[in-house]
Image (cartoon, rainbow, N blue to C red; front, side):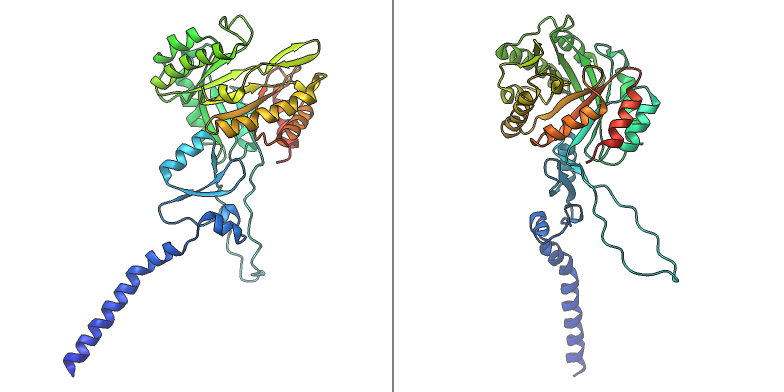
Length: 354
């Protein structure tokens, strides 16, 4: 009998070990997909991921996705997704206070994202640190065609990343306006720069400028090759069109095709609302961004507006953002300049609702 009891005890211990070891596996298998969790009313920011996966939010619709860490980094860099801000733990209430559990905190997510160029103005930088939201962009760049300060740009970006809110994309950029500069100078840049900007406008700094789409994409392919060969990405920043007799005339391009020849596209569209056909061209822009999203979804695309005398006031730019965002445009690069730039940035960031 003692032997039987001994074996019975061993059997019970063995079964307990099997159960305990398999608990983590059964729990992992019981975690549903992000889609199923959200269908049951779970907030995207509260979705639980299986072990080894990270939670990010899709930038276009704020839905949840569970991905590997390596995939998460790549998607964040491409602007496909944004990190979920972590809510600091609440302090324990004293015993003499009500222990009623507060309602769950819903992490705010922006319907659209803003991008600004960082500057040496400390007041502007402070505004960006205080007001930019997860998914927004702060671009640390050199002056046009001045790549002598590329190394200092890298250092400034490191400093800014330590101060902005989690989820704000801080990217570095060196700016050129001619294909000759791109091809001759990019190979000499320090490693670590994120983007090479090719500013394509009808001015003397871009002697090769053309409105012909085939010639333009040929230039883009040359710029794309040298940037990729040296470990960088290409950002193409063309004007939307030309202004003639108080109207803006769009380039005769298939923009979705142009977008396939660059890593990032910034379409300069500032001040369009001041022109007599602004409403029409605003609708055209909505269609362009929709086509790019459908045919070249991996291209990081912005519509550029501006806080300048030509580009408009903060209120005018907010109105333009609200109008264009209604057409599913969700990334805006706001250029700024002039002695009132800090006041204009502050006015826009404090007034805009998102």
